[in-house]
Each structure stands twice: as structure tokens, then as C-alpha cells.
Length: 418
Image 1: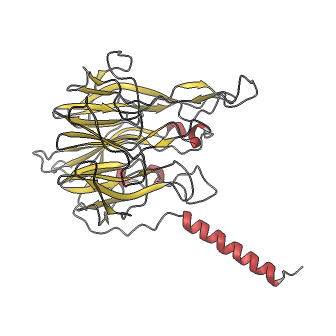
Image 2: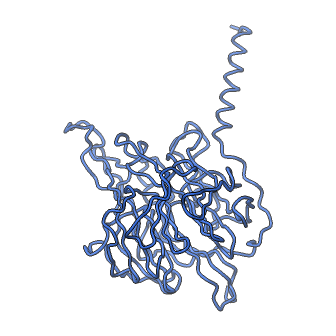
Image 3: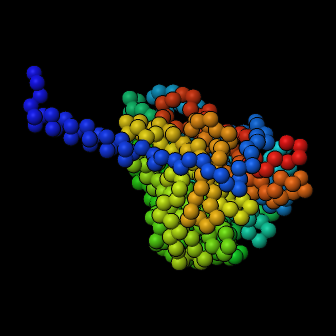
């Protein structure tokens, strides 16, 4: 039967609407690679199969010429039906590892079961302040009986993850001996927070408490923060602002440059269309007064990325990217680009891909980085990356838990021996 004119018009309108939906959900086209001062830099794998094992939500800092790796999570194999799968089911680490040769070899200086320090955690922050590393925030993933099952044997999953969120603050000069600065800072316990040190003051901002509904499937509801706190000693904290002008977020990157603290990107949810991610850039001198540098940087909105100051230039890469297919909520298409900027406002896509990625499957998120000062080999400053996550949100995939890395990579100019 031929379609009536009105039916044809309705069908055409539906096609247009679906096309608009797909276009709105698709990632913005990436700028072509351009010539930058980092074109001669190369990605080199420093080490693989590190003794600290596969880790995400990990923190690293450089202190006294050594690199310290602190905490993190290693996903476990999914529990069989009806017990699982349980999103977030992981081994949570409270250990510390030290490398004196920029990630080539490692020595464990603290174990998880040592009761003299902070509880095991991931998605925390570690900053260097006053000659010590300082641990801030984070969460764990303990399993509990699923309250929705109410004891029923015909309910799945029978277990869920219900995280504890931390607001204690600890400090150490060697990674082995830790001092409790405060058992309960006035800022709410949180994970995915951002932290940095500006003018000898520690700043804590953003982050979230409670697990996302896409992870645990129910209450308590995740709360995302936009407050900013500061401390000169890690013991006494002052509220800089209860409501920063930037939208509440977790997973934002921080950089300190020329007397400003910059906040770049982040997320206000894990999945959705359009993806609930940011690519704005803000800066402050005091944590209270903020200036919008750009509402949309050249790089696509993302969380779980890193931004560092390398040779005086912003360098951003990595992070989580959701599939552009609106029917594939749990698919991943992470960005394969690397971007640089002199001012945080104007961005240029550099040549090449982080970790020499051949596709989005090779790009990780929730890794960490440190910048190593220039040495006598002529290679200049070096940017090192540690571990990271390549999982999707498809918790029924029995192998995705293996997509977490245990390697160290270097982004730098080639040295004489390379």
C-alpha cells in the first residue's frame, strides 16, 4: 500500500530527528594534527609487568629524586551468577612503591596490611607539600549483601559494592612512615577530587560521594561537589568557596602555572547522551575567585585524563570517551589525541597518539603522571605515565577486568642512546 503524503512527512521527520540525535551524540570532529614544539618527542615504554601489578585510580608523585606510587585498585574477575557481576569489585591497595630510576625498577616500601597508616583506597589524590607527600580523600569498594534482594535466593546480583569515602589527611617524607594530620577534615569525604599546591597552600576541590547509579544500580544517590578548600599545613582547613562558578564535577585535572591553579575538564556522570563530560578550563589565584579561561578547549570533553606542565606548556591527553552510538551506552571510544597550549585558552593538537595508540582501545584513563626534570642526557623534561584503565561499563564481559595496565611510559625527546 503506498504511503500517504502525511505518512511520508512523518517518516521524513523521524529520519531527521534520528539523524539529529546521532549527530548530537557523536564526538566533535578532532582538529588535524599540527606542527608543535613537541613534534620531536617520542613515546617509549620504560617498563612492563611492574611488580605493583595492574592498577587504576592510582596516584604517583616525585619527591626527593624518587617516584612514589600510592594505592589504587585492581579489578577482580566477575562473580558468577547469581552472585554477580558486581561493578567495582576490586582489590584495593594501601601500599607504596618507590622507584629511583624513573620507573624502570621498583621497591615496595609499605604494604597494604600495615595498620600504621591510611586505609586502602583508590581515586584519591597525593600532592607534594613542604617536602612530604600528602594523601587526600579516595574510596574503597567493599562488598555487601544487595539490600534489594532482601534475602531472596532468586535475586541477582546478591552482592553490591558500597564504597566508604575518606576525608582523612596523611603525610610522609619517605612513603614508609606516615603521620596523621587530621582524621576528619571539614570537607566531606570524596573520591575523584582534584588537588594541587599553589604558593605552599594545599587546595582540594570537587569530587563526589556515593557510587553512581550506573555502577551500583540504586541509592544512595551520587553527590558531586563544587566547593574549594585550602590548608597551609594539612591540619587546619579553610573554606575558600562553597560554590565555585564552575559546574560541579569529579575527575578534573589540575595544573599550576604562573601563579594560577588551573582546573581542566572532568565529569558529572559516567554515562549518558550527550556524555556528561566537560572540556572547559578555569583558573584561580586563591581558590575563591575564578576566571573562565575557555568554555570549550580544543580537546573533546572527558574525565580520567591528565594535564601537566611540560617545558612550561600545558600537555593534555588520555581519558574516557563514550561510544557515539546512542544505543551503546556502555561502549567506549576513548580519544587518541594529545593537545598542547601555552595559555590554557588556545589549544593545538600535536602529532602522534599517547602510548603510541593505534586505536581508542589502546587509550587509558584513571592512570597518573609525573614530570621528571631535565637531566644530563639532553632529553629535556620527561613526562612519565603509570598504569591506567581500559575497561568499559559492560560488566557482563567476563574478560574486561583484565584491561588494566601495569606499565610505565615516557614522553620525551630522544636521548643520545635512543
